[in-house]
Image (cartoon, rainbow, N blue to C red; front, side):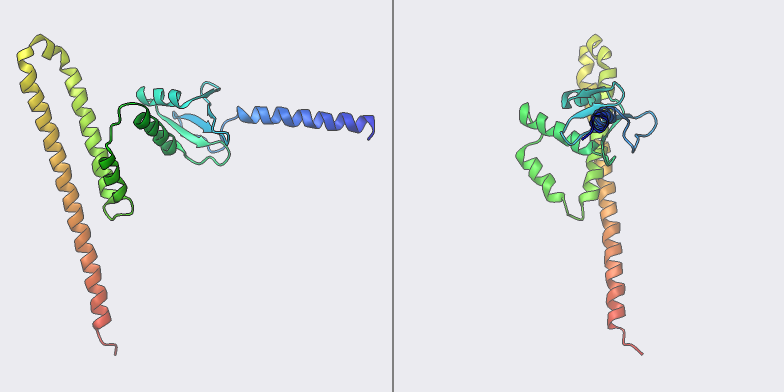
Length: 203
């Protein structure tokens, strides 16, 4: 190989290395929505924060969650949304590393809902219940000063807040039952229509 060809090949290799390095810091082709912090996940499982232009860990992502930051985790190559899988990893680490929030029985019950006709309704019910509990926590925090100033009021206030939370939970469960009844009526109606058309003699 001539000297000029060797120099050209070396130059090409160097250029490729530089391009790969630059690509690692580039924005994901499937960009995140405006105002949403984009985290890129690479095949080597490393997470890259496009806002700070640095690699981060699951602990950093957990801190973003605790700070209520709006972010999305995207596959660096395909742009696929991997946010849920990353959040599930954080939950798994919390469940195995500290004091678990879910008992084995609770986890088993949740697993049984997958593939069940109730899966969508149960997910919606749990999400609304968690939000109601968060609202309750916020109201308790707002009234903490009052509670400290008037200790005798703590029990009545707690009863009021918990009563409101339980009522919201009851209402959500009632709504879920109504949705179940409507789905059952629709299903039975479709079944009856199909059965009638089958039994009706053809002319």
